[in-house]
Image 1: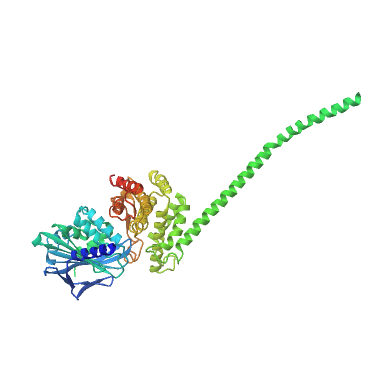
Image 2: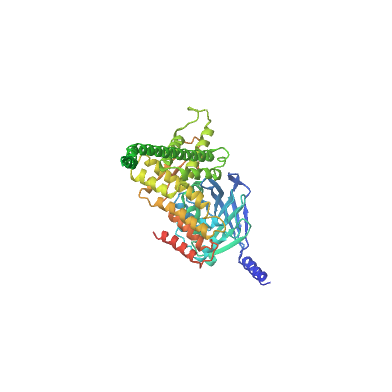
Length: 214
Length: 283
């Protein structure tokens, strides 16, 4: 009984913590990456009713040691301001209101591998991993368990100016949504995973996300 | 009396003949010793020949096991090739390791379809991918003591296979990182302390390579593929990133910090291993 109550409490806590939102991708795709359709645009409707429209600015394949890991796509709120240079892309995205990064997996990937990848990316970019919002982000990778081939996960980051914070929604492969709030700059730290300093095997994808044009 | 003297004399003569025979026998001893030593040499040579034959047979079988069509059917990951590659790596001498690395890298670089062979371009590329994978496996499983011999003999002493040895190290680092760490204990589910201990040992192999003063020269550029898009995993430069070992140590430390290790965090071994990892990060 005690265990059941504990379980219910955990479920309620998780539920109450989750922000409701809607994510609608346009049906017209700009290209395919390993047979995964890359959408032209998408609209995020946040829990307070705000609609954030984004356009695709880049997509590509994440591969490592020869394995195709996932097809990635990046959508941003101000595509016209997106700077297509290795150093400029991250800076330009950090001034925007929001972004979305979609990953459709081409092979099974363990949750611990995703956690490890986020951890390494934070380290490379000098992001303080001991801060609560960063720890929550890394932990969100395990909520949906291991990723299976064909499953997708989306990460949304937007500025909540009214509350002077950045909000990140981690929509995992099982449909769970983890909402994490952090100070301004959180959005940039998330974007840096793909657009900041990246390990050598991620350079190909970064190049595609930065220089891809449709 | 006379007869007594005759008997005594005979007895004395008889008693003297034994040492004399012994003395006679020693005259032949050097010959017999030589014969015995020759026999021992021959036996030793035969044992040596037998050992050499066994050694060559192990290498040959290991190579066949590694390259046969069934085991090399899948290269990502090259699971089927690993047992043969490991057996080869554990048996081969430093010189043999350099010879096969040199020969196959040359083959990968220079062989073209239709030039002295009837293979298609696809077949040649496929064969090259298999050989390069095999070299990675061999390098990745070579015992660390042998790797140190290779570095000493061929790199520090500017031996015949200096450049091959550097290529060998680049392939070794790649294989250990890819298959013995990142697709292994670093990301497997339910990591326990024995897995972490193994990851630490394997990362030490990489630490050794990244710490070498000629780290920037440890590289091999693979240009021999006709279709370098399909074979982009192999048709590229293998080199050593400056932070490679540090990043791996950090990934191991992450296992401790994020409850990735399924063990009592207060245990002595947990603390000892974590401290060891931290000491490498402080370097």
